[in-house]
Length: 67
Image (cartoon, rainbow, N blue to C red; front, top):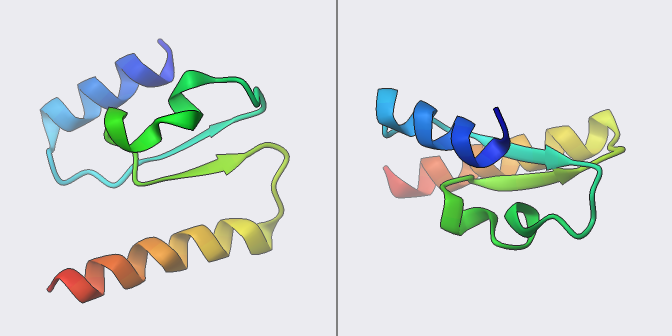
């Protein structure tokens, strides 16, 4: 199962699921249009722990601002 199929299945189970897409392929159309597929953000491989923390913090801040 690829990312497109996985996000559809996850959002079908729980529409509030928070999903980040990650890939090592720079020309991946999902990475270029991640929001259109339902992903909240992207992590381009390889990534460091600091980059992961930044992305997770950004999502947490967005959620806090929505409430």
